[in-house]
Length: 144
Image (tube, rainbow, N blue to C red; front, side, top):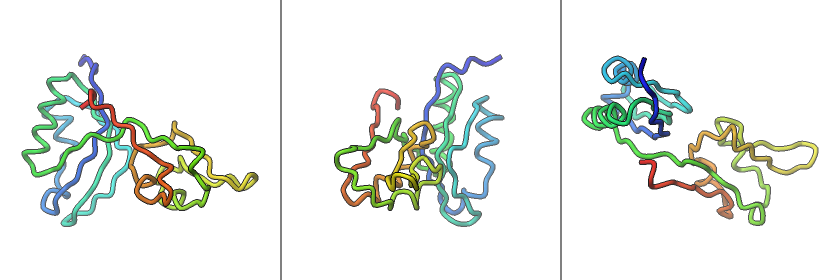
């Protein structure tokens, strides 16, 4: 039984020639890592993007990340948390149209945007679209 003491959320960007390859299978098979895909947009022969939680021992995690990088995949740490400045948010709803996990959604009763951090996959899409920059990324540099 493997000890999964090390777990990180990472963002992967796949070049077109790699996006059709079984990279997640290889992480499990070759490095005995487990993964939880939080968000993915992968199409064969096109650039792809994936956010996943990767778990295993620290050594196997690092070997798995090195393997991905050797395959031409850009690996970056994902945000540990997205937060919202309640005073800045004007509840315009732009973020709700992009949120893949529905962590940001319009409350029809209050006509305000509700944010459920437990559903958030830290994809950062809300951060890029927010016109008043109420959504921010909190990256813990010690986790990378």
